[in-house]
Image (cartoon, rainbow, N blue to C red; front, side, top):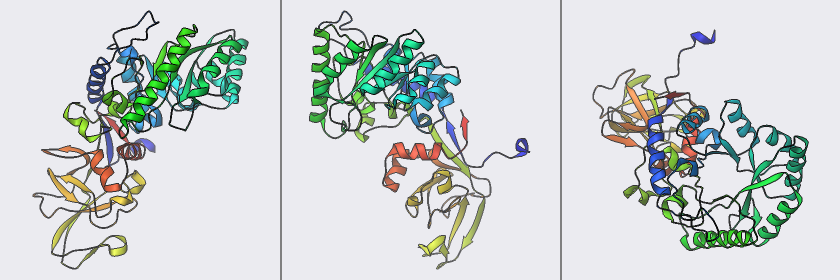
Length: 392
């Protein structure tokens, strides 16, 4: 029976107090901005209120578990929640969440009914979707809020910024059951190209000003992802959508000097086998590691089926007894082997930290990303979505 199955020895721990602390730091960063569109009554409005924050919780909250994360954010009174698609939005409604839920991924007209039924805020960048949403809203005799995405250089989704004024004016003219509640763009290189990012912000600003002058005042203007919020000050944005920083991860290493974040996720396991091997013995598939001296090795029950990448082979470390222990040989489907020669008292059941802090040592998502040749986003998504979670 399921109830008799023991819990996994390897698991992800989610620290909701760290999430709360990170949101405080994000609010500090939003307060450094101002909203000063000349024709607006709410110019120079304070941006410290959590109602101005649109946390990104798509992909199961970056592997952190959307159920607990979304409920905690709702309790912290954020104004919005941002997800990728209709499926994720409906799931939040089924959890009972009442926040405004923004869908970042535009979709096909056939999903308009589900969007309207579940009171979601879709991204619109085609006239076909706008027409379908308007028709569904008319059938239900209600108004539907939408956000329009403007492509200022990402090149993925959105109306090209030079065409956006006419597009928005046409949506406003044709579809009386739609409320254009938000307008936004996305920064593809805020961490590497400041000039390009400033040009994107200027393009959005000029578009919004032109719309304001025509009486088309769109309440919410947003563009700042984590790097945009951390690295740029603006006067055109009144909604901020942090993702990475919410989970205690940095979009750029140098930001650690003036922004204080706490990782929300850590990954833990235990030693399940330990032995002494002689010089010349090989470890794991392909015999990619040959012992150059006698050593003590331990087996840990985590592997690529758990989101611990095969590319960590012979590169990554884990923490045992507060000491870094290198991974020896290839990562297998559900186990790794590590060197514990230098760890006093290592034995069966000894706690292992795969990602996180133990005593005075730590292994971060950035460390793992460097070893795997990827980004910290992929690390937390992979581990978080492939291991059981425990709340702290």
